[in-house]
Amino acid sequence: MSGADTAESATPAHSTFSSSDANVVHERPGFVHPRTYLELPQPVELPQPVTAIDREQMEGLRTIRAFLKVRTSYDVLPLSFRLIIFDTSLLVKKSLNILIQNGIVSAPLWDHKTSTFAGLLTTSDYINVIQYYWQNPDALAQVDQFRLNSLRDIEKAIGVTPIETVSVHPERPLYEACRKMLESRARRIPLVDIDDETHRAMVVSVITQYRILKFVAVNVKETQKLRKPLKDLNVGTYTGLQTASMDTPVMDVIHMLVKKNISSVPILDKDGAVINVFEAVDVITLIKGGVYDDLNLSVGDALLKRSDDFPGIYTCSMHDRLDTIFDTVRRSRVHRFVIIDEESHLKGVLTLSDILEYVLLEGEENED
Image (cartoon, rainbow, N blue to C red; front, side, top):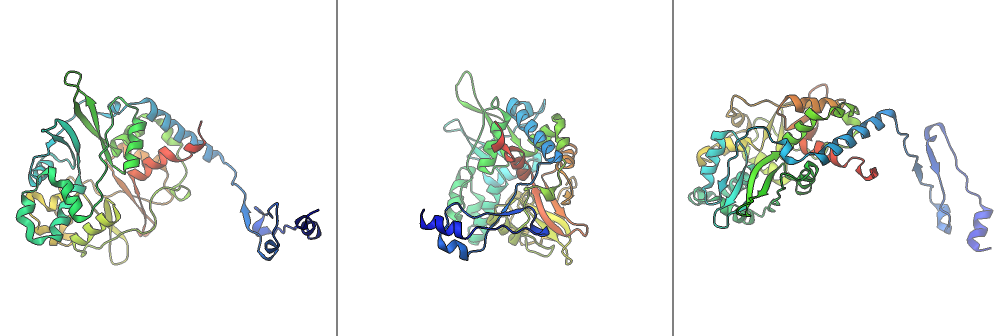
């Protein structure tokens, strides 16, 4: 018999239970070192029992994932749609005016020299131009002459990590498009096909997280099974939240968007209640026509420049469930939910990226 065996037989291990730790088991390792007896036993949490609502939630998620795997990105497209593609030789300020005139916030890029897809122009690109102008205030004349093919140079100049250019074939499963969006942290993805005659790439359309989640909400009735409240789910952001007031300078909020790689900043009143949200797309209106003077405005004055058809902000509570959130997505053009309590105080932010990530990844490791 070894010394370790002798010690273990001479000093049997005891487990003590009280009413407060009825679900905790104290265990000693099979092989015991002398110092083990000087340490407090570590509690081992027993797995929580799976409830009927847990099973129903997972059934709903599995059904959504199965749906995404049998439908293609083509299926998400409406019967008729408009696609605007920018050549990379276009001036940045002209592209901005075209976006505003057509009520869109992004567009695929095309390199006419190589006849190839060259990426996606988004609000982040314009924010990078603003950052460059802010760092180089004497370079306004140069900023006015920026063309879309110089956007990568701007990223390098201000030290921004380039956003990965991703695309997907329109006949690939929608699930694949969703996974690519999550992996690249993109909020939209271009559909790129190959022309049968020229054998060159051609951009078919662009699909967004909103369109995908609305497609699910309309076609998958099992979203009604997602009845667990947000407080019981690991979804959304609840710490490190960036906020501003109506008096905060717009440039300060733009710095928040860039530094934290976020698309919105909740606006609070003096009592800490949520009264609005400054979104990345609000920046586009402020620099319309290549004029940067409005960047000196306060958030309150900047928000007054929003178009009359702005849909407003959407809020929810920690007690709301994903079934009702999917219903809201089905009925309204919503891009995020600001999570508040009974007194409208900020508790967190739930983005469409959060919802998509939860739907795709929650419990997936346990599936066949």
